[in-house]
Image (cartoon, rainbow, N blue to C red):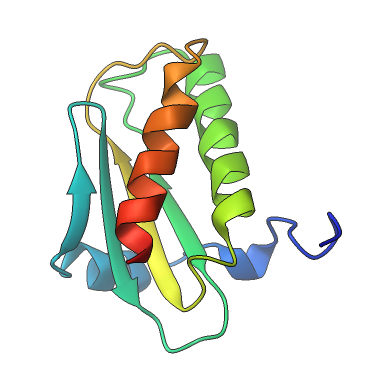
Amino acid sequence: MSSFETRFRACNRLKCSKEFKLVFASKHRSSDKSFLFLARENNLNQARLGLVVPKKHISRSVDRNKLKRIVRESFRFKQKQLEGKDVVVLIRNKINCRSRLIELELIKHWNKISK
């Protein structure tokens, strides 16, 4: 699979509040102390991602953007596995963006959500 096919494009994003509300209403979840993953079927042939990273938990914009890039990159690699789902990732607590454990936690959540 080429990197062009797995890019994170505009069509892979949840954009409007209506789309986010539909995902928040779903019961399919995966959570721990740092992340809350919500998912629902979207009747499309692609996966879409929405991110919620509050200033309350990660105050520096540099760190918020770094965390968003990490989550998007992780999503990009699991895109085929999540095909046909809308996923919202909510940050629940402070997270050290430089920790390697984040990637392992994300993989665990992607696998649980994809089932």
